[in-house]
Length: 328
Image (cartoon, rainbow, N blue to C red):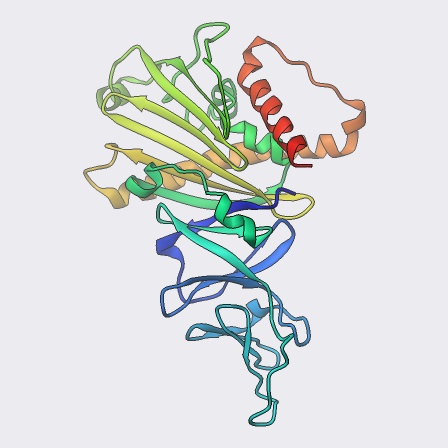
């Protein structure tokens, strides 16, 4: 499990003064916004009788255990034990783990690992997350983390996996093999290729009639994949953030962002793109679950056959596995 990394949780605007429970890399965490505006992440465990603090409630800036009322502040320090005699000192070991939280580009990130290393690592800088309209949703399911992180930037799967959702809007690759222009970077890979504009007449009226669409892909190690399609004066950007939840499940948060597409009525744009994104993700999840089941059952007896068109996926895997090995 990839520790000492930043993991995206939610948009800053959606973090309220209420307890949000989550699991990252097998660690149970609670997250909330204190009344003073601070984003707080603590271990989801009361150190009194080891019950989940997420079963309790908030009292101002503090979280109160729902079992015996022990109260913990934003630092994870117990500040009140109702069953103690007045003027009795709180035991110094009455402390729970505090996680480092950062709000960056209007999104909330949690650092999981050695807190001393948090200052040396930054979340991926995607300026569009701070500037463009968006919709997003987290999905938790059984899948292989590497395969899931690869799926968004796989150029050829769009035509088949998403034939009922994206359909012809993102066009088709009509050169074989395509020129994917792959660049290996310090923090991932990126590249560009072209898709033939196969949109229908009404879509071309709105998105443009250029014969080719520019498509840019990017992977930010270790947990964000990016696919950007540029039309005439309009851009569609899809980000997918991945993290391991536990040994079998991953979390995939898909963020769909756009520029100059729904300027006439933003609420409709968010509603429409949320429905469309759900459909797209459900198509991916069905295949990734299927893949996980086959790999778990037969991994030692399977091999994969790859061809020239798999260049992007193979470059991603080579980079991903090298980085994992460097961290062992």
